[in-house]
Length: 215
Image (cartoon, rainbow, N blue to C red):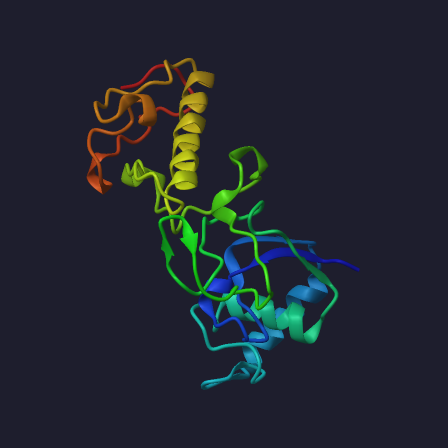
């Protein structure tokens, strides 16, 4: 039976690496005490080998000793067929480059990281297609970055960041607030929740939460 759904992080390893990391930003699992106990036993045994990873097969790569490696080891090596890899352009969308080379003037270069002849570029997906996103390559929305550059590396990031601020605005409106902040930096884009570009420009939600009145 299918017990888990995840996306893979192809950027962490070379195209020909057999076992890819599970991306740490998204995981759906069916609750199962037996699975939990097996994971616990794997950790306690600690069969993570230098230069080879879990069971000498999965790793090493970023996060391979923890989530990104042990989930891949469990479902790709120990229990193949019990999990489904979802389309990372729809679930856990990160706006990642699908190839090994740089993207120059919207032209993507290099091999497909999926080790296939062709590969989808998630950065070309329509915003309406995306179910969940992972703000990592686009950076955190509260860093007040508008991604103004008209390039493949920034266009979808700009839409996703703007959508995050729209969600915040909708949330505050549901509390009876205006849905606009006092910030002055690109107010149409950030809904008044940024005073300047960068980490220090963000204006957090004011307490008390869930009410129209603020201190």
